[in-house]
Every structure is written in C-alpha cells, then in structure tokens.
Length: 475
Image 1: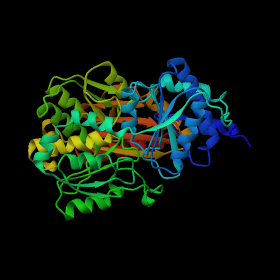
Image 2 (image 1 turned 90 degrees about the vertical axis):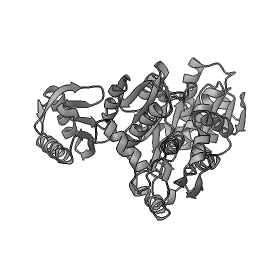
Image 3 (image 1 turned 30 degrees about the vertical axis):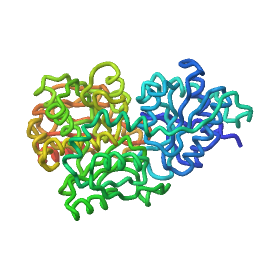
Image 4 (image 1 turned 30 degrees about the horizontal axis):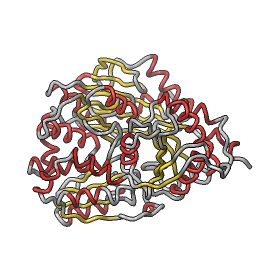
C-alpha cells in the first residue's frame, strides 16, 4: 500500500516534521516530504548550489538521509551528505558557508528513541521561517512517494562538515583564556552528535576531561537524549565525586545545552542565559539587543534595562529569535527550553557553543560557576522563581480555557494586579512586581502549558494553585 494514504499524519511543527519510525516516519513519506522540499527549492535557488544533508544518531536516520539524497539527485540537484552523524548547528553553519541551497537535517532532537524527524534549514543557517514551512507543507499533498527513477541527473557525494565549523567556533571563543584556567570538566554526550565535537574543543582548550556515552546508541541507553536532571544523574555524580569545575551535555542533535555547576546543580536555561548575557557584556565587551521568547525569564529584561540594551520578546520557537538575529545585532537570544545563540554566530541555537561559553565565563572570572550564578541573579534584581504546569485537558476543556482567558482575562491573579495582556503566543498576563503568567495551548495534543514567574516560592505556589483552580472550573 502506498504511504501516501497516511500523508495526513505529516505535520510540520515549530521545528520541522517528527514522527514515529515505521508508523508515519517511513521511507515513502520521507520521499514525499523530500519532493515537497525540492519543489520549494526550485522557487528559491538555482541548481548550481548544492543541497546538504545531515542526520543524527537515531535508528535509520542515516538511511533516511540517503533516501532523501537519492530523491534530490533524481531531480537534478547535487547533494552533499555528511560523512557521519552531525550536530544541527554544524550543518546549519555549513549551509551558509558552502553557499548551498540549504540543508535537510534528519533529527528528532531530544525526543525518545522511537522518533525521527526532518527539518529544512535555509542557506542563512537558521530555522526555516513559517512562510517557508507553510510552502513546503502545501506541497506535500500533491508530492509523490514513489522510488527515484534510478537515472539521476544530479550527483551525491559525502563531505566532512567538522573542520570549517570548528575553525569558526574558535573565532568566537577565547581559547587561550580557557586554557589558562585548566578546568576539570565532565562531559556526557548522551549518545548524541556532539561527541567528537564538544570533547575535541574542550581538549583543545586545555580541559582535564572525562567523557561518558560517546558512542552511537539508537536507544540512548534506555533514556532520552535530553540534557535535563533525570538524564544527567551520572554526570552530576561524576562532578561531585571528582570536584570538577563543571559538567556539560547536549541534546541529541546538539542544539540544546545541559550545564552542571561544581556543586552538582543542573542549571536551568533561564539561569544560563543570564550568566552568559552578563559574561558577554562584562568580560567580552560585547553589546547588542537581548531576545527572549514569551516563556523565558524577565530577569533578562532587568539586565537589558541595566545596561541600556533593547529587549525583544518573541513567540515560542527559535525560528523567531533567529529571524530577529538576521534583522539586527543581537547580543544573546535564547529560550527557556535550552537553546541560545550569540552575536557573531549563526541564527541557530548551538549547544556546543553555549557549553563552551560557560567554560569561558568561569575562566574569565576565576570563580566557581555557582558564584557566577548568584552574582548574575543579584545584578538582574533577582531572584525570580518560575515553574511550568502541563495540564492535560480534554479538547473541549482546552478550548474553553483559552476562550475564557482571551475574552475575559482576570484583573488580578493571587492578589497581584494584571497590568497588561499579551497575545503574541497564547495568553500572557503581565502582573505587577515583575511577575507574569503565560497560558499556551498545545497545537498537537489536549494540553495547556502554564508558565509562571514571580518573586517568591510562596507566591509561585499561590499563583499555581489559583490558576489550576480557575482552569478546573472551566471544564
């Protein structure tokens, strides 16, 4: 049976299409999506520019990549496939560096092992904008899932994307400064694409290094390639046991970071953004706007105000941050889910660079990371406390909640007055005292995510309780 019958399952989210391998993520559907992308390429590029293809460490990802390469070559494109699994920021950099027609990246990022995905990265080296992905999606229905003709008019070759990327990364880092600190670092690759990249940069930077899980395991050791607390137990133990200066990790395709301080605390992305914003201004003398998503800490706003920098708030999704980076000089752009980029870098999140910048900050300050965190929070008039509630609701209940908060937003929550209502992405209530609440419905499941930030743990609990109660009543 032709897989075209389940093409209705092919849905592009904030970062491409993801599906379960052998259910909807099949070879016929990969051919179909590749042809939909090719149809877009024909409107945007000439065929003298190569199309790059890369993949992560997932089951069959390399074979899916070869399938896409055969389809594109059949359509007359010259295709360059990476010689091994590859980080997303690395293929993104090469997409620009090699004057390509963009790149196809086969990855499901931090999703569990049964998933694979594909995303298109244009030649500007950042996530595809909604206009581009909307065009690709519109092409899918009429695209064929047939096998290539076997008589390609284009070519397929392999290439190593690593040397040019590393050469570029070293221009963004003060390697000599990091060397002088002689840092003791623990690195958990989480079976991801950053192995052979992040560990190499650390060794070049003089780190005393111990690495874990630096091989391909399509089951990710039974866990997920997500650099969060529950996946980083071994890394935390190693940092504490050997009194290391820091622990580093990335997600599956290395665009998100995971950072552990010398005490064994897993830092939140909000905290890392704060520490690095301060480091770039104070130690590296950099300037530019700060860009964050609606769900990311407002401590960054305090920082921007303190240093006279512009702050931009975007919808959730790094593509919006990347867009702003292409429009103006951005000191740092990031999101609470663990992605960031900086001035001078590509408009794509990069976990390898983020990890190395933290090492650089420690080297410049000559202080433990936990102290840098305290100082950054204090300088941003913190702390602020945040939380995220994932409320699993029926579809009707979800719609009722969003309708109610859209049409009749409360004038106060937990005794804190609402100053402003934002509708950039979901419903955001800007409260007094620097507090805020964001309700974002999931586009793919009956779920409402509620993000909260306020001045004390007690207020955080109170805000959460009051919102959960108000939402429950709408069911």
